[in-house]
Length: 326
Ligand SMILES: NC(=O)c1ccc[n+]([C@@H]2O[C@H](COP(=O)([O-])OP(=O)(O)OC[C@H]3O[C@@H](n4cnc5c(N)ncnc54)[C@H](O)[C@@H]3O)[C@@H](O)[C@H]2O)c1
Image (cartoon, rainbow, N blue to C red; front, side):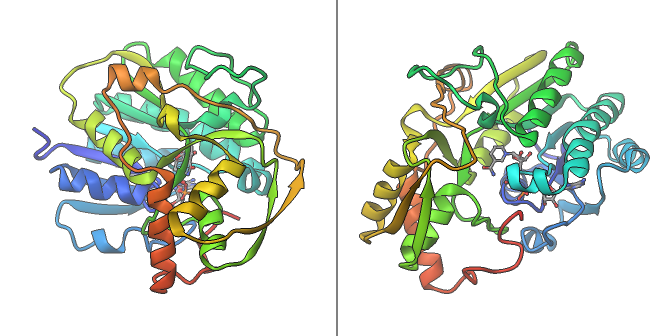
């Protein structure tokens, strides 16, 4: 079913993208990874020897080249992960963030539709919910409340896609905060950062320890994207889904305790109180569970053990270059 079908993955060399490419290849797709390689290509090195994989080194802000490539490739689906990711990176590169997360998303969607792509999958974020006052879990129909440039660009890109994707099959996936091992490792994500500090027995600071957020494993994102590419059901229009599971909503303090328990370590941290990041939200994943039968397999405890083991084996230099987005 997937044999010979081409899928373009933007942000292919990234933390999530490298695993998505690997998963699509194992399902039989032909995969064309597009990336400017701003954090290097380590995530893709194992795939470069795979016959059904090709890398196009491209900055998606070069709209005319992007269009030429899509015209040459004529993909069945486009998985759009390339972005300036996270509040600190967007703050540091505001112009690049707007151009990449917003203008290039529009250009990519236009070029994909013009060149016959049937499916467009856009990586958005649960950060779009920002700050919620209520205890109830937030659903896809609840109001968005972006608190940073990063979330603003994602919310605006979502709105544009919803307005323009009427006749196309478009998936807007609001990912929870990712965690777990990846060929392009990121230690600037909460679970990974805490797991590293606890594994290394380092002292660390925790801001806003009572705030809630949902977490989801990188392999589960890859599995979901692959299932969507394989799905024979056609869902025209914009399909918005929160991606994660209800039971993986954690307060930071609970996260630290879960990581410590999973790795049998004692965390050494200072609870600093309020920081600059006011995000606080608990999210419902009922829609994706019911409609796409998506059930994440890997929890926070699994990642904590794997990260601890990987650092113990010195598979990653603990503070290596390209292991954070700022
Ligand atoms: N990691 C998370 O916790 C998380 C949570 C929610 C949503 N997301 C979304 O998932 C996607 C992937 O996130 P990630 O964690 O893998 O990030 P990442 O920073 O590891 O990967 C992004 C990739 O995009 C590439 N890129 C950036 N600008 C580009 C440009 N102009 N042209 C071509 N390539 C460019 C980078 O080189 C990088 O390889 C992003 O869209 C992000 O917003 C991630």
